Length: 348
Image (cartoon, rainbow, N blue to C red; front, side, top):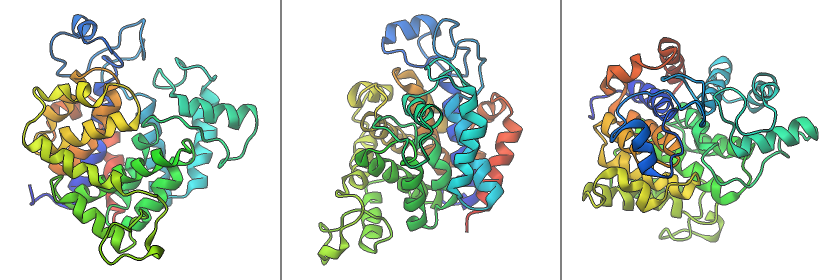
């Protein structure tokens, strides 16, 4: 789909994330697949209401979880300022999100608050710690679910992408391995928005950016690199895995594809989630529906899996190739689409 322009890819990435997030609202966190299928049938193929006694109970099909809400907050901050202004985003968290939380998981907008947000809330509001001192060691994809806005905004500027994604991630997650893997995910998404395929050559292209010091990863493994080429992150492995996984995806090694959750793991941690997302986004690079539905039907932390996969595939197919029913089924879809278009218009 080389005829898709950059703005369409950017809008597709944002709307793909919103769609994946909302698809996961109902069948979220079923680690027993038999139980998921008992509640939602053999194949979830659309937005669904959550069960009243489970996560997001009381919400309706097509609504955004807290992940989608925070993504919206970051997009609004970027659009209003034309660039990423971290102080403004933090102010929005302080004023628009944290007053609605009480430190417990099943509270706040979106029906559930992740551990890393709860930890930041506690340190910020209960102990009055400043931003920069409220991050915890949670290894989930909480930051990745919002930084995709930065990956889209700075898709054509890898250095700025890496800098802003890293800084934003460190607001709530301080583990440097999680930071490195999140920056790598953002770099992959940025490449897809530019129009590069998620294939066996993508990692080579990413490593070339490392060699040119446009991505802050250790470059000692690149021929001709010098000790001064050591980057912020000690290992470039997070940039190397997408192409290996893409090769497995193109050979259809996991059958059926929803079993990525069994191969890479159902839990929330980035080292379970990112490989599964890369696999689905490479295997279904031109088929948004199959990508996100296989992400959902694998159970476990399927909301994050579908959200992050949706962004990767949405960037590859562009907004015009996302099935209209997924857009129509989103609550406030018109406003979300306008927001995505405003963000895409900022890309230089």
